[in-house]
Length: 203
Image 1 (cartoon, rainbow, N blue to C red):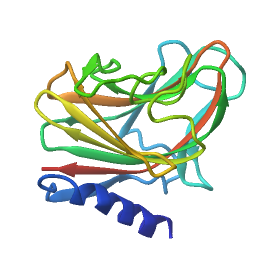
Image 2 (image 1 turned 90 degrees about the horizontal axis):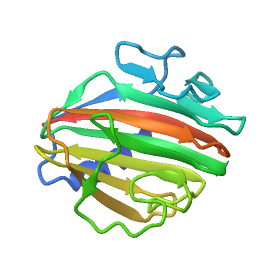
Image 3 (image 1 turned 90 degrees about the vertical axis):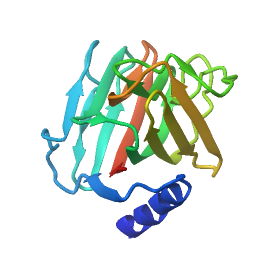
Image 4 (image 1 turned 60 degrees about the vertical axis):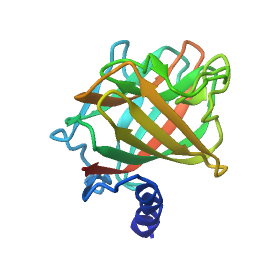
């Protein structure tokens, strides 16, 4: 059931692409209880989250902070992305406390600019809360996220748990891209995110 639902949701994203990439593959669904270090890199600049590992029962990559403090877990695929590539995944968000975010990093940093107007008090692109709620919000449930890579911009399309679709087109970087998911807390933050069903497409 998990795989059938995943394939169905992914097809919605691919149909909406101008020209669907001809080659798609399962990058990781965490059916192996050990993190595949040939495909993934974990790193932290301030200290890892309390929990960051493959949860073998649910078959997800699990990140959780249990004690309020500044922490982060960066989860990075060991590949560089170029124009025509796409990268899809799902995030299950559980309600957090204080400042806590899961956000994309492109070439090591949060994207410096974007095409769309960003008016949300918590910024555009992250999930969670940081001195305000971002456009993706802090709603419990599954977010379905797709990144499309172009020569000098990266388009993020996210479907929130309430069914609303949010598009952010990040600029200020150029290919080849290093992509990572940064999940972090502030000094007062607690959080829990589970990641699953990563799919890579190459045009």
